[in-house]
Length: 440
Image 1 (tube, rainbow, N blue to C red):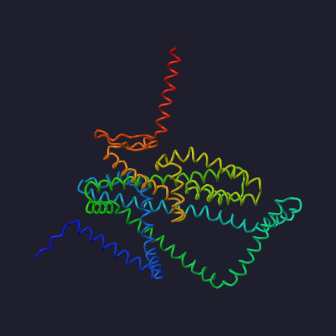
Image 2 (image 1 turned 60 degrees about the vertical axis):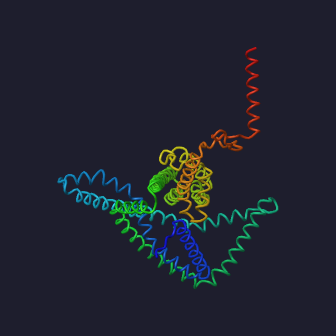
Image 3 (image 1 turned 45 degrees about the horizontal axis):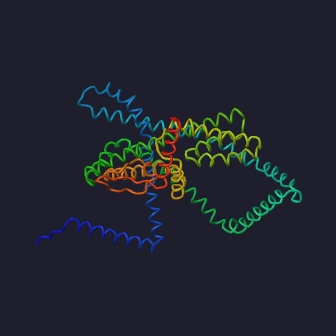
């Protein structure tokens, strides 16, 4: 005897089973929190080099295309003229392009570290060496304050006393009793650094394999999409992935170029005016500029404070320069490089940065805007398709003063607010009166 089960009942049963399994897993996770945390750390440590390798391959893809299209494919046509050797020609061009891409990456990383690390080390050493001088300057300024003559001086001295007492309490209650834990933390930090180096090497190797077989990986992904979804929905998924690639690739690569330009401009300015800690501050300004909106302030505030300790005049000039530089970047440099790739208002970008930073930290602040742009476009596309099915307008401005939608004779008629309608009618009456007066 055969069982005839309708598809809708089978789907309902599978959904119910999935809900039950997820509920059991959630309950298990609550009861075994420590084990789940260990499992999470294991998964994170295992997946980190794989994810970073894929990200690295994605970022290096434009460089790979440049070497492949402009150098090695034409070179392959010279060595492999026989049409039967087309596959060998592609492998030849891809292998040399990957080799040159990795060499290009290593030159940038090693050369950048060679040029930057000594300068940063000297800057940090100078800060540590000049720390007693800064302390003496602050102490002499504090001693010059007279609480009897100025209310501001009294509050400043109260704040300094409170900070000093809290620092002493923290030192006695947290630092000194836990020296053994601090030493263990330093040791684990060294081990973590070695693991980080190993993971970076693994990520670089994985990126080579991803770049070598990227067409096959993309083909497999498309095959899975068309096997899971219907033809119509699969086409929409692929269109969405292409849009996401356009947004992410353009935004991330453009933001890196933009931040490099900003850091270079800051370096040139500081060299011209002969400021201290030139390389260190320029790197801070360039790196933090990757974060939209908040990045310039995150980098400018500590940099200005460092220069204020050296010379108040330098700190003020630098703060004014950063404000001008960010205006130039936001209105000239950024739009030229990035354009309007996100197609989001400032409010939504700010919202995406706050939410992304709250959940995922700095990475969330950087990638929050492009992720939200993809989600916004996805929701907007679905909304427009549903409105078109109902024969309603898709323009947002139409809904500003919408009161209701009334079907009349098979057509959906939009009713606007009475106040708005009365205002429109009153304006029309005034215009009619003005026209009559002009005619008279």
